[in-house]
Image (cartoon, rainbow, N blue to C red; front, side, top):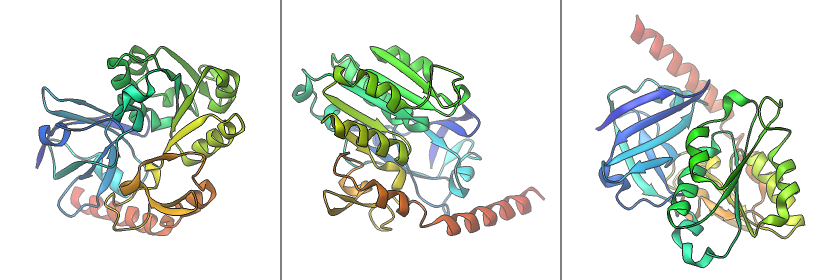
Length: 281
């Protein structure tokens, strides 16, 4: 069991959790993820590391309530059953900062994708980089951790679908306007957003790194749910990634795979609702 310091709601469907897990974060590098289990009989949930304090041994996670397992996570109070990690490969820029010292880098985040973007930008700032960020969501109330991300970037530009904050439109609209300013683009968020970003940057021959963590289910390579096609070869996001060359990813196939477990998710969610209802009685 791991001690939970807090588990709080930060938007309509997003939560932030702080966990005492010193051994987990001791050697963590931004871009890696952990697997959490709310209880002994819970499903495994892979979550990208959002932040950490190595001196105090605290791991910070942001997660979105999208199904039965993540809703179960919202009920966690003082303890969580399991936290395993760090897993996956770190962001290649954070792992090899000297190789990218002279590169102009922009991060493009969508929705809760700002959670894995933040530690990377923070890490690179600590290593002397000036990073720009483009961050988009459906509306202003769904823009997360604005105060934190603004402290570690050189420039941040916002886009909202409804125009309630920043530019009305999509992150790709902003990226295309400033695309000549950059040598590398890193994009993390919904798969459809990353596909659109990669299609845009391909036209301009801008190196693009994408994170396929939205495909992950089990996080260990055993379930096969996160299998994707990269440069015509099968790859698993949790084992070979989660980051890949965005111009080599078959996004159409990835989008199809995301719908594979829809019916099972509905059944699981209904089972959980019934169990919680019985427990309340």
